[in-house]
Image (tube, rainbow, N blue to C red):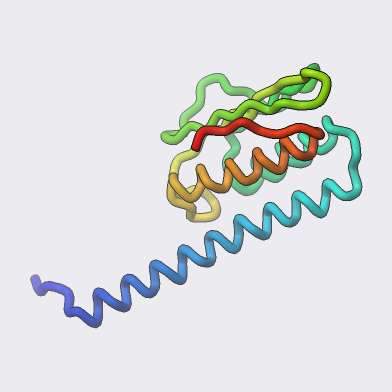
Length: 138
């Protein structure tokens, strides 16, 4: 068995960097798509439903959003290795949660840390979409 040459190592690092950039671009495209969809909807529950569907289709099927009387998905019997939980704080004291579970590499090939960063971004957009904000772990 031979050890990798310095050139092979550099090529491997460069390819990983390119792949990481592409994964991040996919996350940004999804966030922009969500913002574009929000422009046509003004009801907080409709906006949360749009966010839920985008996350469910692109980031993880294991997601639940609860906000007031709205309950989307389920948090029971999750299989994901990584868990994200965030509070949604809306106007007039309305509160809710966004909870999701993930196992890498997922459909976008994200690492767990990339996925958590993407979820913080999307939860933040969801919080703004309801006229409030999200409180997420760092």
